[in-house]
Figure 1 (cartoon, rainbow, N blue to C red):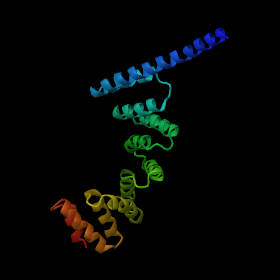
Figure 2: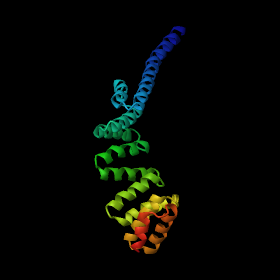
Figure 3: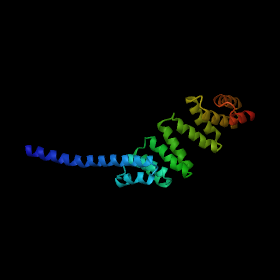
Figure 4: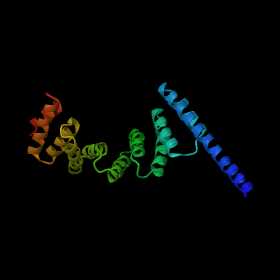
Length: 202
């Protein structure tokens, strides 16, 4: 019986040792990567992670960021996409993926990611605001207004959301609401050119 226990303990230790070594290797690789990133040496920041790459969520998220900084947007998007698939309910990889998609001009995919974020976190200010911006740029003022309204409800004295909602309301013919928002924008930024121009159109 003692022999069996001893054999089991030795086997358990044999399994733990490589796992501990891998954890140490990954910690060292991340530390080296951070140091190189601080010097803006992105190739050197990527190299230690690629050397120990096993496709973990953390590695993909980190490589997505580094490839984005290195302006290799296709590789950045690929790693962020893997991270999104690995953690489908996580918000951080979705916001990460949006960065290279923006650089690649893939607006429809960006909108899809903002929508996915809002399914998990309906009050997310960043997702609501930028979804609103996309619709505003498309002159889809109704949907744009709905997204900006959420942000203004959360942050009533925020300039960007007030001025954006005012523009959406102006184009929807809601002049009284637009006037109130442009007036508020001028409280936030006295003499603001965009707010002043908006009031002149009413």
